Amino acid sequence: MKIYKITDPPIKIYGLNVIDPDNGNFWRLTPDIMEKMPQYNIVGKRCIGGRVRFVTDSATITIRMELKTLNVDRAIPLPGSAGADVYFGTGIQSRFAGYVAPTNYNETDKTVETKLVKSSKPETVTINLPRNEQIASMEIGIDDGANIYQAAEYRVNSPIIYYGSSITEGGCAPRPGTAYTSILSRWLDADYFNYGFSGGAKGELVFAEYIAKHKNISVFVYDYDHNAPTPEHLANTHEPFFKVIREAHPDIPIVMMSRPDFDRDPKDSIERRNIIYQTYINAKKSGDNNVYFVDGMQFFGPVGRSECTIDGCHPNALGFMRMAETLYPLMSHLLRDYR
Image (cartoon, rainbow, N blue to C red; front, side, top):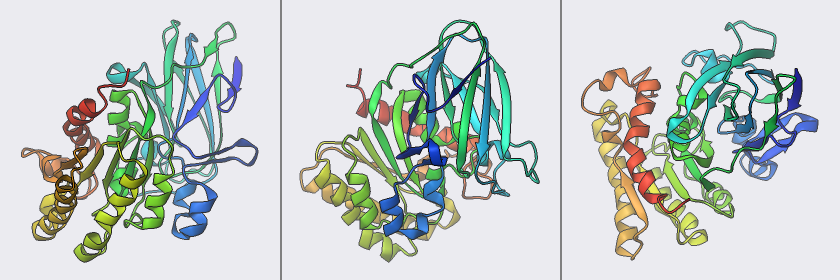
């Protein structure tokens, strides 16, 4: 078996801002923003949204992952909180191939390994990194007579940027690849960054400025109303946050969304939705025709809404799938010119 570190060419890593293998740091946030916002010192070092991508003609693939942390989340299966999952192929034809994760909740060994079988034809392999954990390393093993190649760049190579709550972050997807951000970006064959933070994203302008520093963004999607302590807080931050992004990126589509679990507290949800909608209307009135509003009430649909979450709030696989299916036509339209 031939062994490659995920930092070895031609393997590429996407969706992370810090890739420092010598120190075992694979982070989605950079040190400067964590210094400004110390509440992100733990969650910013997690690798949610990170992906490993390559092409191989190997008939078997061995994945060995060493975790730095092992945090049990009572609401998320281990493959979702501490595991990485694998897809073969690209775009909407991608198919789930398996996962690597600890085997039980009282596991103390932070090194996990799995072996997957595929055809011996060259095929793109994408590994979605864990949601709740920091990883120290990951290695890929292929058959001795096989080859590994660089995968084609994403069709949409300017990343989608997602900003929002624990739902944006992927809670409570049973695997990383079943979060709506992952499903949608996989179907679109689009690169992306996940800036969802459980209880943390509250529309701070310093984080808007951090996002605005991205040189290239294909679409910006934000939906942090769950994390706003009050509707008044949301009203004071939602439009200013939008304006920071718009000033830095005057031509990109910006999608504003409200929370999907609308019916848990309809009065509060309506008030928050109206605040988000007002940001959208104000932008349209000012001549901005590249803004879009998505009412979160429509995400789960009218039938089986109670089956779409694990706790009345956080989506399960069904809830995330319905979110992705709702957003896909809009996002496909917005990204239609990418070839």
